[in-house]
Amino acid sequence: MDLYADNILDHYKHPRNTGSLTDAISHREENISCGDDLIIDLTIDDGKIKDLKWRGQGCAISQAAMSLMSEELIGMTVAKAETFKPDDVYKLLRVPVGPRRFKCALLGLHTFLNTLRKAQEKPLQSWIETVSVDN
Amino acid sequence: MNFDISSIRRQFPILQKKVGGQVLCYLDSAATSQKPQPVIDAISGFYTTKNANVNRGVHALSEEATVSHDQARNTVRKFLNARHSHEIIFTKNATEAINLVAHIFGDTLKPGDHIACSVLEHHSNIIPWMQCAERKGLELDWLPITKEGYLDLRETEKILAKGKTKLVAISGLSNVVGTLQPITEMTALAHKYGAVILVDASQLAAHEPIDVQKLDCDFLAFSGHKIYGPTGIGILYGKTALLEKMPPFLGGGDMIQSVTNAGFTCAELPRKFEAGTLAAADAAGLAAAIGWMEKVGIENIQKHEESLIAHTLTELQTIKGLKILGPTDPQKRTGCVSFTIDGIHPHDLTDILGKEGICLRAGHHCTQPLHAFLGITASTRLSVAVYNTIEEVDQTIASILRAQKLLQKK
Image (cartoon, rainbow over all chains, first blue to last red; front, top):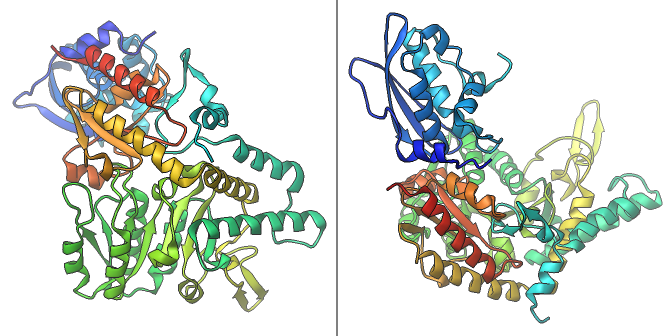
């Protein structure tokens, strides 16, 4: 199946939940291999993701993945959100992401998990920890 | 020799390969070139009939391997017009060659000394100097470039005139903006102010004849794999007087004269800098690549590539929102054209093109300081070699237009 499927292009051209939040936990991550970056603003209330906005620059895959994730995550319990894995992102994308593009697809996940860790005052995790499938 | 593009293409087996049902359209030779059959044959021929450890033992096979390796060294010497074969040091690639100089020449420098490289260098001609500066307490000066992507000689002279610069490292040909650098003038300038100069010829060697005696540079480095040769082999050229003064780099077998419990003495040049078993098959492959280029004729290669670059520049500029990095005058460009397209990320573009068998490079091409200078994080690069055709460029342009339509935000 084509990586540039309709749902990906739709989220790339019309990204959901972009922008910023006030009184939120904010965190930025960069894809060191291409220089793309994402910033997430996050608010948590009563153990749930109350709201999430994001902004940044990147390719269609990183932007679409972040947009799809944002829809999924808003309203989710923190306990569930912190177990979000690469496979969950791939399921949202519904297209096979090969070794060339997984860094693009997972930039949003890495940014989100570290925003959450920042909110919980936990130490940030490395890229390897985010993408590793055996944890 | 008459130049016949179909006969050239037939000599590259990989060009018959199909990707996604389409014939491979390889426009990424600045990253690595494809290999003609004579190079592939030279490597397998070495393993089939000559394989033994070079410079070890006196048995017949070892002698044959050693002779093959010495011949390869002499082929490289002639390719660069170096005065002596012992001025040709085999390394893993240009990166290792530059690191060798950064370690052993760099180690002769004193805290407070300056070294200099330009903004348009490949990371392999930046990082070794940053590491060297850190190790030895040196200052690293950045030589400015003009808007078009040429070394700014006037500003460079001001830096060198301070008299602190001991070494200048510059590329002979940019791997992004495709500008041939004024290396002859730069060499004279470096020498005027008492600095030695290293030329990174990684891109240059594939496109232009090199004469190190005429150029008078002190060091020059290139990789075999960018000039139709194998990976895993590169060259450091150094002037005898400098190489003799410098301590050895890696320690190990073959780089010694003698070893006792008390210590060791170094072998003569070039073995002093070639510790461990040599990549003899790859050296034979590199020699075959040079032989092949000379048979085709470097002036034929240049003429063909110039027509490809001129056509590429003209056609790319018809695409809306496309910006060329560096000069748009084909006379000022060699080997590659890099560009950005408004609203399209290079990764998306090259991924979509890749499905049609078209191979372009996306990213910062290991030149982050240059991309920062240009005010961008990434670009797409189309680079040519002797086996490319005008039709391939046209096919790429058509494909870029389709990708643009697909990704355009309304």
